[in-house]
Image 1 (cartoon, rainbow, N blue to C red):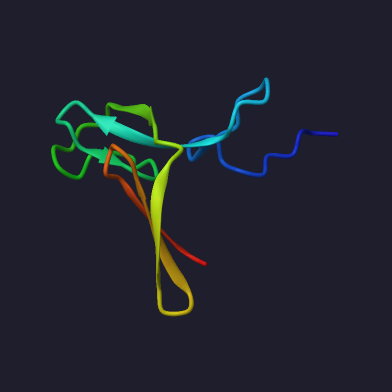
Image 2: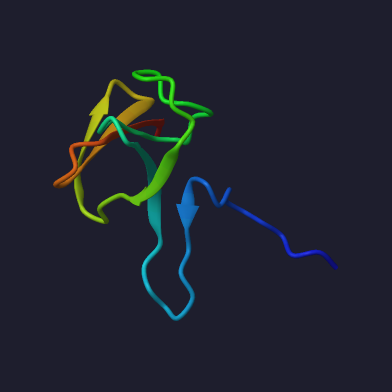
Length: 83
């Protein structure tokens, strides 16, 4: 039976050996970082985006009843999602 992939490897890294999982952003040579991965950098159109682990700590906020955001520290990246 084929191995089941629950999370896409371009979004979430689950290390072996018991380490905590983390989200992966992608940084361009122009200095911009994006999450999730894009086919190219919207700022400079470069296709060379390097993986960059996001912090495992952050601060969360909720908006209304269904959406929230998590700000990653110290990178400043934000992820929005349905709650």
